[in-house]
Length: 465
Image 1 (cartoon, rainbow, N blue to C red):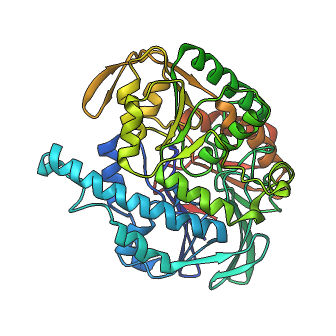
Image 2: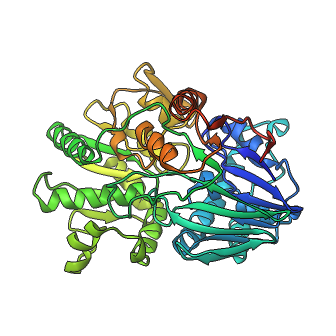
């Protein structure tokens, strides 16, 4: 058996890992690379394998860096099944259609501003139609139930505690009469996050493929996130400013709205418009309401048991049209505007940043991971005083803050506990992390669990198991 990381290898985005066994090829995820625009465009345009030869895919969750290249895979000849949870199947349909739309718009941008020799591919990476066509390959599976993947490979989904529908994967792989267990963390979540259930325990596995996004960084207690959000809102409101929150339309937006609802019910924030300026977030929120099987106890007790919609209350308005979005530019604060994308690389948030970043009354609040070379990373970097948005330089006069307690990823302590509590691990393959986070995690695990071989592969390295 061979494991080959084709993405998220000493980097965070582009999750895609190939397992070769019994003459079959199985993919774990197939996500978009995100970061420096031109570099990412080149990486996304080509596969280091033939999509026609892939016999099955197992999808951990519906974030773009895990599912975002599936339409391109299908466009290039992939015809096999994609196994995922039912919630992930529904979310992927929404997320991929939006991604197809963004790719079409990016193509317009490339044609307008780049030389022909710099074009990453012939036409858009994929279209809305490509995104729709690939959905025929998706097959929903229940948590905690085994399903057949291909000859000699069975799999099971466990709660990952990361986003709605996210799963860890347990693989039972039989080769030449010998059965081996392989675990894949996907994006490992945290305990006590709102809305969804906590991560499950990983059963005994001999090989563990594990994310390392925050391998050397602790998070603040999740309870502190709501307090920090409250303080930022009240302070900015007193200045008459706007709170801009670049948030992933999937999960983070719903978590923030959930906390805002609780804060408003408890009379801890002033009455002010809360605008969710993201048609995608609206569609994703509709999917959330269809999957109560993923909810935790608090969600039931605080809202569902009382027949309350956790994502809708008197202050909140969801926009749809571009005209509604543009009207916000001339509307005075105080106001809260949440818009995608979470790393500020696409979507309506860039327009709001362009109009509001030079107003010192305003606050820009990061509530999720910002990858290297993204606009979001530059905005929260305290040493950066100006940023380029739509090819124009803007001074960073608005206050910029980061609430890292909202992270949906396990932190360094969570990862240590997860790895060391998983029994039977002989080989640990660290993925989905930048080297400054991955290396310290590897060093700690080597000291704590001396019998585990730790591997930090580069892209397309071949690991024999």
